[in-house]
Length: 300
Length: 293
Image (cartoon, rainbow over all chains, first blue to last red):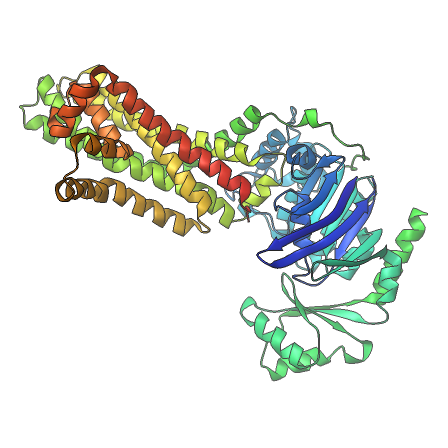
């Protein structure tokens, strides 16, 4: 359904994506896994025909650049954060995108019901919470029943509850036969949604493997999600690096991979640097491995 | 919540919306947004108020009646249009794509089954219609109030002025779009648009005068240089259409009337079409080659 062949995309002299090749059959679900700046979002933007690239990308046989319109007709896209006219009504937004997708019948109520927003049709987009906006983006993505879903770190800016609800919604979708390509650096999300994982580092795809195998390889460790105020994030990154960790930024703070013995250590480092932690979550790889194994068993 | 449909079949390319359909959908959205916005209301109000002020002051100088009175009124309105319409159209065009890009809306829109040319054309059409609405409201209100107050107006002058103002608005909107696709930020785009407006309104006039004296420009070259400025084209065409004589412009006007005579309408129309088509085509080309991010 999606074929990516030797795709390279450069910003100036720097290759954001270097010689990437992937193949997704119909109904496949592939996660792009990597740290911030690894090239996940750039590759997704190439697939959508937003960025010019060298190489070939086809979606259902249509070239993503030359036949961009026909290729994008096959795709429902959910970005990290919905950027849209804030003063537009929720129902109006659905109607607008239905027309842009060439749908003669605008099923506003049905589209909103699919994502649990039926009671919010009369609200303005700006009145929706972050989680609701993402649901609206998903409702828009599903208009016209496209066979492909492309998701770009869709839960990165959501709180824990919003994220859990959104992932549950996506889990229901993943069984609907659609092909899913998504970027994430949340292991529990990958374990819940992906059949395969493509690891991307500095723009290069370093490996593609079944999800359960990928999660099992991560071992007994965990990822600490630290919620920090935007103004202290860069300082926190520097302090954690000095403390011997390999942190990366995400939508609400920083992610720190930790071993079972050093789960509290990042807090000590940040306290010494006088950086306040607003909230945290600990996602264990072992738990994600169980999730992935259960899903694989359910599929077979 | 209902169950999601089970689906994996590709959709036929023939299901994709046509160019006309997408341009229409985007234009309607743009028109609605523009009409709801404060700039539309402010510009229209300012245009009506200034138009009425200019009209009454001009009419008062000739006793308030007679076609000669309206000739002065028209001249006043031409000068008003020269100032206000380019500012309106340039800033509206400059803000359109740059602000959408800055807010991430352009990338989201282009991730749908829509081409970049459709986005440019749709936005252009929507903003052009909103400018038409604003100008019609402004000039129409002026004409109605002047007629009501007993200032005799020539309907053909008003129609010419309205038509030419709209052509000027289209040209300036195209230029605004070109600025918009080239600028990275909306604030830079609007700032550049205001600079271009100042240059076209004030600097080019002064430069032309200074150039004519310092370089002793020949009269035909002076006329050709005037045609390179869409505002000058509008001014010459309006005067020619309303008064049928460009004598008021001095030697260059006399030369144009004598040399080109009845071809002047075609010359001015050609210049305006170039100013409408070339920047808009350039804007579509630039957007097709640049990242929308």
